[in-house]
Length: 298
Ligand code: HSE
Image (cartoon, rainbow, N blue to C red):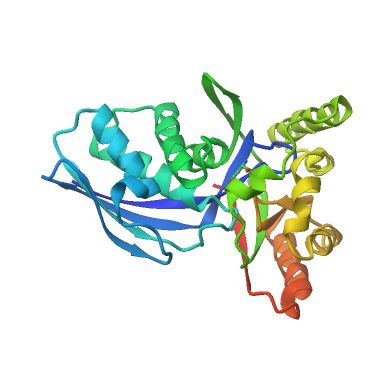
């Protein structure tokens, strides 16, 4: 009647796949504890590492748990404890980790009543609470693990994409907060057909490269013509960080989700560590606080 889980940080968009692609990180995420209660309601008894609401109907994890208990007509309640290891507003799917982690754990308390696709839908309701949009890329990556493609939103269709085991992410998180809601407002609702063609061609290239372990193709395809050009001004030294990562051997680099974190992908841990050092050099004397993570994809 107790469940302990690791809720991974996730990188959404992955350059060319705005709202359609994401991957989960093995080495960074929250810890969450869930226990059954007799109260038939949801309580949040502990939150460490971030300032988040304790009222269940205002908390992403609480909202997901409430919806699942209601939908399943459960005869028990749930108490949640959240230990956050990375910050909300980082662009690393903080709310998604809470939402997906809760969906996954409450499902265990319900004897695995729901499929991963159904869990993704519950977790998306948490994303509405967090940022006003039912985005699936972060939550699906956290639930399925590895790389995912949100092929369609309605009806929801999540595709798991295999990836080379050597692939390693380097992330730099400058500690300025960008609200996803605000970062979504800077994206124009229309794009020229030429841009669309370039973008979907890269998505195809990226998916093919991930399937065939073709690192050159992955590298050529990690280009974003849509979100990155419109959002990069929100992130200090974005171009310098990106160029430093590419110069150190990264296959590609771009904004993680809605930012401000920047991710790079490399074909070995050694290169990913070099990328981390190069990123560190850029921010070292900038006066900006930051964290750097190197992690395999899980
Ligand atoms: N795909 C979403 C965005 C992710 O870029 O706005 C939000 O974390």
